[in-house]
Length: 118
Image (spheres, rainbow, N blue to C red):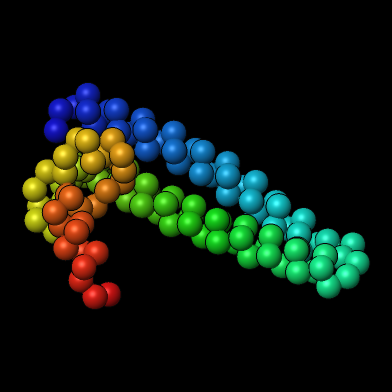
């Protein structure tokens, strides 16, 4: 992969990381407000607050997972291994990285990994 490609993906990853950190901060504040909300009047209100809380926690968990993957990709850039499939050790296609810049696998290996039992 060319240096300007790596610089492009590094910028993309860092911008997404900044956005996720901002989202996580906002979600954490929102969850704190929901937990501190004592104005729940009836079972409907309680149910609504509980549902909002569950949704926000799931969104927060997904963003934290994505943040970890982004940090791993940024570490690979530092190590010089970015864009290399972790399974077959072949280059991951540029188009795949444009869609998912923190991809660990090439398309073929991703399909194999998805079919394999966990």
